[in-house]
Amino acid sequence: MANKNVETFTLRVSIACPSCREPMAVNRLALDAACPSCQTNHRLGRGFWETVCTREAFAHALSLDLGETRQATEFGGWETRHSMGRDVPQCAGCGEELDPTADELRCGGCDLVMPKRPASDLERELLSQLTHVLNESEPGDGSGAASFACTSCGAALETSRSSPDVRCAYCGATNRQADWRKGAQNAVLLYLLAELSKKQRRALLHYDDGDDDSAKMSITQMARSNDWEIRQQAARSRQCPPQLLEVLASDSDSDVRKAVAANPNLTAKLAGKVASDEYYGVRQALAANPIVPEEVLLALVADESDRDVINALSRRGLGPRLLEAMATASDSDARKVAAQSPAIEVRWLEELAHDDDYEVRVAVVNNLRTPQRTLVEIASSDHDSDVLKAMRKRPDVGQEVLRALACSDSNSAKAVAARHPDTPAKLLASMAAEWDNDVRRAVARHANTPPGTLVALGNDSDVGVARAAQNNANYAAARSRRLKIRLAGAAMLVFSALLVAGGTALVFLSMAALRWMGIIEGARPWQWF
Image 1 (cartoon, helix red, strand yellow):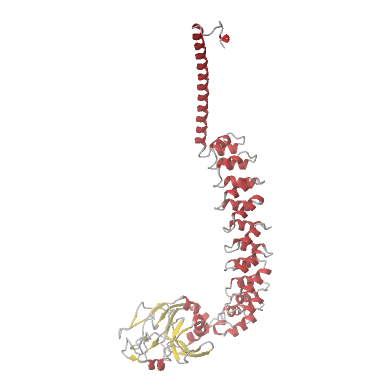
Image 2 (tube, rainbow, N blue to C red):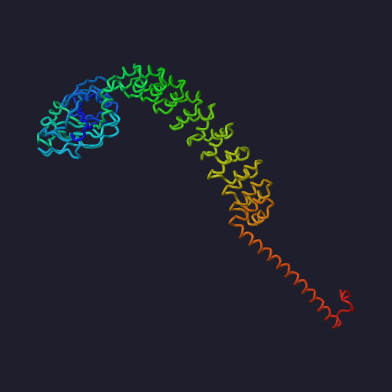
């Protein structure tokens, strides 16, 4: 083997079928296995492989000589017989040794190819240094039902439920259903490739005088260790039974108790006990554990005051009962999380809109489920700057809300209305007369401000307001339009004056002509009438 860091573990597994009690080989690191006798699929799950391929099993296998194996029998959820050791991969056809580091494991003698695939997340959880899996019954991703070994040469076969006969592609032998029952114990020898540095080998083999005592300990021994880190490893393990978790839940070390709170084997009763732990990190881990029942979470919310624990709760799916409990909790962080939830009922948003804590009210404004009528109430009465800032950033603020802001007693609220991009021109014109400079400045900068209002603000007594109006993109057009209106008005006055003057002269000429004709009498003009 060219790479000295590469280690090849061997694994052979068979179980008793829970349905028919016949032995069945498991020839893939799969989550399912098929019984050849009764044709039943069985769900193995991750827990099965975590029981078979423990760290202790890898440590024992690494301590063996090449070709040696260690037999084990488990009686629990599964009646399992398995062996683990280490050896060089050998061709199933002729027995020639193969290089496990090669990209393709092709036998030079009989030209057979041994399947090889990268280790999946499942295998890396068993041992993080695993890189590849060799000689599985079917190449793939590690999912699907397992098949069985040829009773003649031991090569992997793909079983067929439609026929009792399967022909071996390697040696040509025909395997019958009866042969499968006999050969079920003759499981395929799997090879697990791992890259282990010297330090990692020492840690696994316990060569460094016990820096990693857990390598050769059972879960029970680990849970009773004097070393808190080893007890923590036991509390983290999926193999740790509930009775041991209950013992570790009272551990003096908070990190151990925290590991208990995060364990997927936690029972509802034990979760209730952990919920009252004095260390917030334990309660935080419990809040993030997806298997914790809702009743425990409700009790946790009722007594919780730590922000980290509440945030951990917010990252999980919150049902109606939990949201109601958080909306009515005494802790403001819990009420804030409820106000932020997109699943909260509108009635709780309406109630939280009047909360004493401004962060809760900000969360209500930011929640898109908050109805417009509630936003109008907040705009009319809430003068907190953060709440108003959230109102300004909200994309769907209606005209009623903007009108409420403009009519508020707070200049800050009026400024928010003056800055909102959807504020109508009429509302902006009404706010141009406000005495507060910030409000008038915001009106002067707005794109919807009417031209007449904009020109008037350009002559404002406050320099900042006048400059803001003059810098408005619409200011030049507005001023030009006003000038044109003034010029048109002046022209109309001149025309009217000329018209009046011309009309008077025409009247006098007409009266003079009538006097000359003798139709009217009188020497002076005022006598003509």
